Image 1 (cartoon, rainbow, N blue to C red):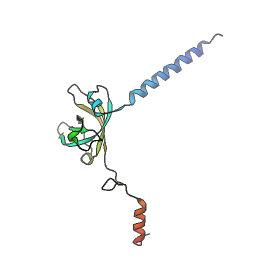
Image 2: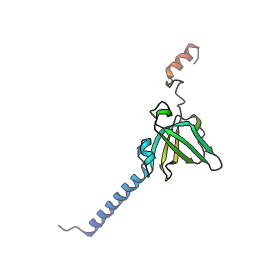
Image 3: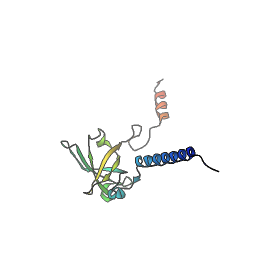
Image 4: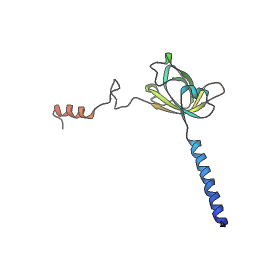
Amino acid sequence: MQMSAKYIIGGIIIVAFLVWGASAFFKTTYQYVSITEAAQSARTVQVMGKIDFDRVDYDQEKSRLQFAIYDPDADSPANAEQMSVVYYGVVPGNFDQAKSVVLKGKTDDHGEFVADQMLVKCPSKYQGEDGEYQDGTKHDEAVGAQGGV
């Protein structure tokens, strides 16, 4: 059985596109890592942590935000693994209300994690004071009890 040249060329093109597509996909996906791993990573990664507000410093002239994050499962920064972070750009408006942040970046030659992107995680507007989510049926009952619609 002799394969024609067009099938061989077609197969090579398909394989080339599959390899190209897979490499493009893996270049755009970033692995979540722990604070310890992020502090040692020379490649771009994603890391989540709570903000240590005692270590926040913003230089408005340089648009440089420097702060520290710590383990998101820890109760306080005192006994938790911490990492120094530098972010260049405008500070998100809700940064001071954030519970935690998700950062995408890598550690530089000076041992600081330089974040290219920052996503601020704030308390939900549907969350009560003690972390309890609001129940819509309670609202409906209260409105009904007051003679509402």
